[in-house]
Image 1 (tube, helix red, strand yellow):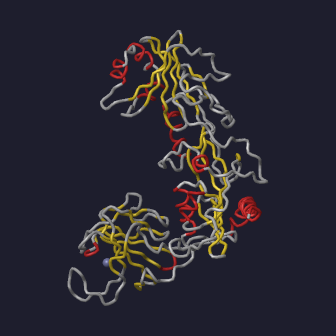
Image 2 (image 1 turned 45 degrees about the vertical axis):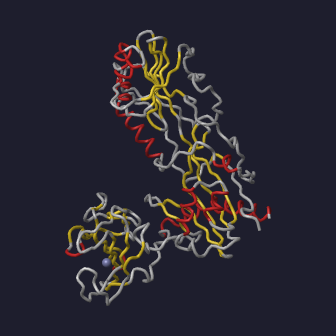
Image 3 (image 1 turned 90 degrees about the vertical axis):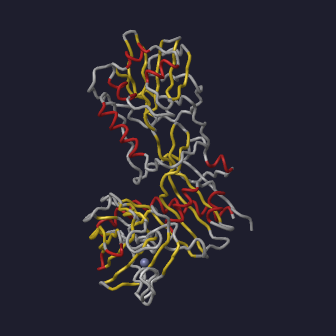
Amino acid sequence: MGRVKSALRHDYKHGLSSARPRRPVVWFGAAGGLLLAGMIAVWLTSDKDAEVEATPAAAATGVTRIELALPPSSQPADGPLPTAAPDKQPIAATSPPAGKTTPAQASPAPVVAAAAASAAVTPDIDAEPAAPVGELMRVTVKSGDTLDRLFRRNGLSVADLALMLRLKEARNGLAKILPGDNIEIRHEQATVLELSRRMSEELTLNLVRHDDGYKAEFLAHPVERRVAYAQGKIATSLFEAGTESGLSQTLVMNLAGIFAWDVDFALDIRSGDSFALVYEEIWQDDVRLRDGEILATEFVNQGRKVRALRYQDPDGRVDYYTPEGLSMRKAFLRTPVDFARVSSNFNPNRLHPVLKTRRPHRGVDYAARTGTPIKAAGDGKVIFRGRNGGYGNCVILQHGGNITTLYAHMSRYDKNAPLGKRVRQGQVIGYVGATGLATAAHLHYEYRLNGVHRNPRTVPLPDAEPIPKQYRAMFEEASQPLIAQLDAITQTRLAAR
Ligand SMILES: [Zn+2]
């Protein structure tokens, strides 16, 4: 038996209902517009902190791409690496009159191979035929820099800078410069012909010299979501098989997270287990930036097949469900803190480590570093938050089914989980500490059912809510294409055997 038997990936531009709507980029011509554009960019970038992978994973891992009997791919497998001056698509040229709303490029980014030169501004067909004159320099902001200092250091005209800063867009766009920021400047001697600054993942501010001063324009670099497929067979571990299939670590972790309630990836995995997934990739200018969400996935563990489908209901709740509409989760996390070990078990007859008296230990202690995030074990409401005797800084959550959970010895609380607030399972409510009666940093965690303490490690956990009845039909409609795609991938796997 080899390791990964086959792996396939396939991309096509998708139009699944689960995808967030493609936003029109609209130029508002004012600070508000810019702010909004920035906010939109952040909102779109659900995983903005993730490391940007500039190299397509498939290329890096030599994964074979197989065409499926699905919408054809018009995308080249490998995009060029990002260049210093990415393909620019002017949204709207602007002259000073502010407050004007110009409809932006309504269609998605044209898929044009960014074969453009690395330096010169690539003129769009509709753009003014800006002859690339002058020299391009790329300046990097240093600690303590002001624009003035930056211009002087690079021998550029500060009079030009003053002229630029007459534009509201320039003042907004250049108001905050941080060490490490790059600004591209095309110049002729001291005269600045053009200045470009990337405002966000999706927007560049461009200041272009004209006879009567400078004009500001914003260039869009829209990100697009493409659906990709992957599958693999496990020889040793999911992690290994996943990365050999060209999946990023994040994607493998997310995959494991979806099945975490059904499969113990440390103990249950056997050689011959397999997985398949339909997921999103985030692309920009034909460069794959990173992975998006897993839309549908299948895991076959010791012959048992489990499938999970991502679904967002009209209330905005996103979760993974079985094709039958049951939640993949339990209503409670078994352990509300990661990277922790059990330092003291639930024990009705324990000798207390500080008080040296026999006192029942009504919870489980998880030793973890101070500051480790503590997660709400289940959906619920914060009914207590504050100092609570030996518990120190303590949070109590009220859940459905007359269950409460208690989290003690916190170093601090999370600001998003104040008293009275509803919290979601997995949401951070506070941080590990050693407040109250504690010898070292740990989380003391209690689970009470009808007011009675139960052992959090062994108490049977209720299932999380299935798809609400009223959304059932919508769920089925949304999940049919995902199931069809999973079927297609896994049938390809069988055929390839
Ligand atoms: Zn304890």
